[in-house]
Image 1 (cartoon, rainbow, N blue to C red):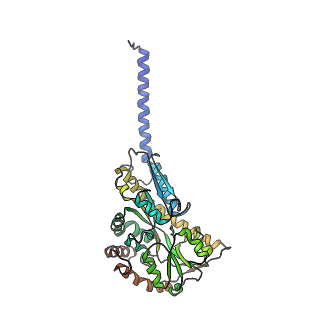
Image 2: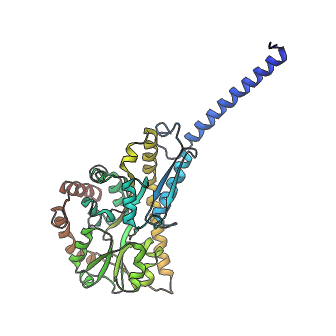
Image 3: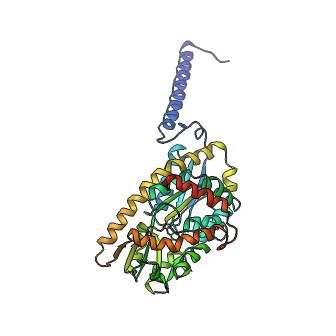
Length: 371
Ligand code: 6CS
């Protein structure tokens, strides 16, 4: 028989009220940490709640310190904070899972959940994704290009649907900076390209674009490019300046031409089946984080490109002539490049291009540039 004496009852009541206070405090602490999520549009309304423990793999085509990898690392940090550590995002450097083409396949097959992907490597599968490699089509100014990339319906709805047919969902498009050319000849006018063998990604349109200048192309992974340039099996290449610096391409090339012929565009992608099968709060978490990161990555690439140019100029052991094209010289390139746009649009260069995406995007670009 249990005997309740007064002392015992008082002790029980004290324990019960202490537990009540602790539970209440715990709740407040959780809410506070959600409210503190900087940049969260919906104050955690949709992206909050219970998150099951999970690990998501996020592959990139670049190395630690470079824009794509730093993007994945920052994304991982934000997801960790927002889920109080329940969801761990693991960023992978280029090479950890094969070449860029292998990486695209890993995402499509669901071996990884997230990837930063350059459209050039799936140009054969998604012909409309090649639009980013047209020369002098997007604004030369990276800020205006980013505005188009973030807000374009042609890209974020129509082109996205084309990728989704291949189990790739691009959640955002962003610039890694304006492209520049490197070579040993010093490219200043279209005819300087004649006879040069230039490295490009896997996009058929890139072949046609450089063919218009009189060059031939070779598709290799960037991991093989330094050696190819050094051995002169490849004569030239294009990339944003931060990458020309970090991958040391300038060390084995005499000149760098600031041509602004287009911007290097990257996409934040997810495996479509995986993403569509996620609970709503996890989808909202990914969407809001990707949206917040647009501004972050713009500043990141800007800082890296500025620092990259300074580093190339400062490397006196590997002198590089920097050629900045004049407006007149750019006009000469445009004269050759612009007819390629229409041919691309009309499907004369690569099959399967949707002219409606081209037309809509062209209008959206004109709205931003006012031209
Ligand atoms: O040239 C390339 O293929 C590489 N360039 C950049 C800026 N990022 C990754 C990509 O694979």
